[in-house]
Length: 286
Image 1 (spheres, rainbow, N blue to C red):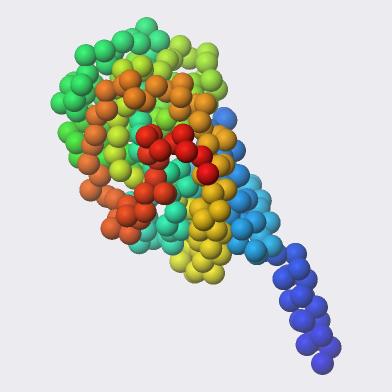
Image 2 (image 1 turned 45 degrees about the vertical axis):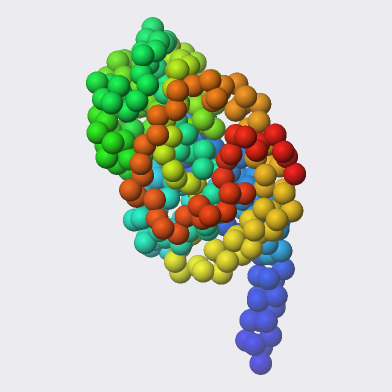
């Protein structure tokens, strides 16, 4: 009976203390996504009603390594926020709420400051073809750009992309509108600037992904995010973090270059307009 009493005490302590969700440590010197994504994760946990605690992983890992660690259920990391694609949804279990409201697919180019008007005459994707973009080798964006006939150079180091752009190894580094300002500020010594002429768009989404061996975690986070959508708290959090930034982007004044995304899974909730960024509706904060 002693073992049974001991097991019951351990089980009660586990329930009382909650489980730990380990999230990844990014390669970036200053992770431009961390503050918002962590705030969304905390909101999802709060709304789920489950007593999860959050902890950052000890190791710095590239995105492909994080995905593999989660798929293997190694215990070194439990969750990742990343862009969806068909392969990732086969490997991991997605929480099908676009926590970025689709803005990971709205891209503005980082350029060398000395070439600030490089895209002054670019109006279509065909006009982009003479130029070479820089990307990480394991980002879904790389395939999306190449599928559109655009040239892409790749590397396995996030920080190297800024260094190589600064050195003129490629022409531009397309970054999400919700990342680019922080990235530019954290690399201010490199002589870079933000393009002011175009925005590249393709349909995609940032989701939380967990191991397929942890469906309960996915269900809990789904429940929490759905509750945050229903009561408006997720949208309010988005406005709090990005309204001023998006106004500075002047998106309506830019030429929009739209690309197709053959890697977007059919599971994407495109039939739910409340989950996606819609410029004409963004002034109506719930």
